[in-house]
Length: 196
Image (cartoon, rainbow, N blue to C red):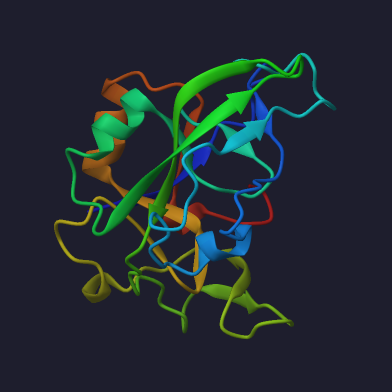
């Protein structure tokens, strides 16, 4: 089976871009630790559209943001719930526009708690972070470790590269058939983190 990186489509010139998450007592870096957060995640989190981009305010099914979180619409969430994503939390956020009005209340941060060891590190071009040698800072032309991916898993990430969301071909096709907007797929073997 082929696998793809799931990304926001940066070719959009009107899609909203959200500022940094502030969700005390949850720190933004904790979203990349592959840990459960729902018990500490506040019920009234608001994320702001960037005031630097006042013309970019359309809320699509994936919303790009400064923290590289996977933030999705309610229809996208409902679609994901039909697939095996392992242990996953959908953490609700409200989105405030550049005029300080709440634009939407039905968006969710997808927090994948499980980690899947899918990267063949011997054959993939990788650089590890100078600050934390357990985290990948750049990666390209991913070679998959096929025996590390559970056959039924449709959406997953690795705790070594937690900002990279991978989907199965089946889930990719379902997302495309559902006409989800602002979604881009790049085959893992062609992915370069420097470009996305």
